Amino acid sequence: MHTLLKSDTHADAMGILRQGCGSACNGTLAKGCEHCIEGSKMVLFITGRCNTGCFYCPVSFEKKGKDVIYANEMRISDRSEIISEAESMDATGTGITGGDPLLCIDRTINAIRMLKEHFGDDHHIHLYTSTMDVEKISKLIEAGLDEIRFHPPLKNWKNLEKTNLSEIAKMDIDVGMEVPALPDHEDELSSLISYAGSIGVRFINLNELEFSESNWDMMDEMGYELKDETSSAILGSEQTAMRMIEKYPDISIHFCSSSFKDGVQLRNRLIRRANHIAKEYDIVTEDGTILKGLIYADDLDAADAYMKDQYDVPDELIFIDSERNRIEIASWIVEELADELPFKCYISEEYPTADRLEVERIPLN
Image (cartoon, rainbow, N blue to C red; front, top):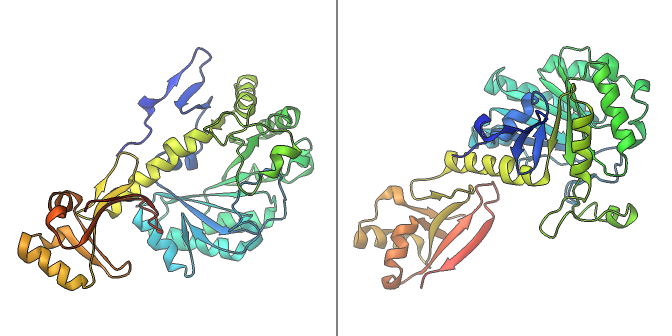
């Protein structure tokens, strides 16, 4: 399994650590980021409700504004499914996000307690919110929250002294800021970083601004352009973040690029989950997808018996998937035998996610 290791990073002439895929930092990474980079963080989307209304919000239409719960890509209907999803990837930590989790404070507290009780205190939990409510945050700390990241609305970036941030920064929890590097709001961003650093906020995460299906309108309204034809990143966001890193060398700032999220964080999570759930007949690719053979027949039980009787296929290399009305089998076996089999045979490449989204299907006969 490939993960980003310290040996994959290098310092440039200014002492800034370059992490590959365009990401960089000038200090110590937040603990939650370490779990994310390793691919061992489960993403718990606790609600789509939010009162902040950021124009750049990338949350998808199926989640935005809706009171729904997802663990990674799986829609949750029962709290036990949260634990099952975390176990399926051997999660060492959880990032609770939304929407704004503090709008469903009781649900969020219950989730934190449940995860800590099941996995133990070492299971690191961080949370994203725009709500600086001291009473609610005290309850989160009491429940076991390890780290909190604030993304205040843009209108507040220049007057954070009017918020409760200075009081929260003194509480017994790792406090950070996480906002997009907006290329046309550099003054506001600089004010946010300067103030946060002055009151002891432990880290600043700057995300590369991206467009999504739900925030596409901002492209015209704000006059943004795409970075290039193959990326969803906005032109100028990376340069803005790097100027902040250079301007504030004594404040821990991490720039997380769009390609880093996909090329490292997501990829490592997929690889981790794939290796954890793969069956004997599955092949895990270097990108974290799963290759398997598929057989379709009118009578799955009879087809399963045929493969075992006629070709001595061992039990651990063949499985009847009655939910999808097919037989799963080792790809190397079905590739060799497809031409002589009386069944429709394929090689399938799937994501190891709960929905098992198929990437490609190749017919063999």
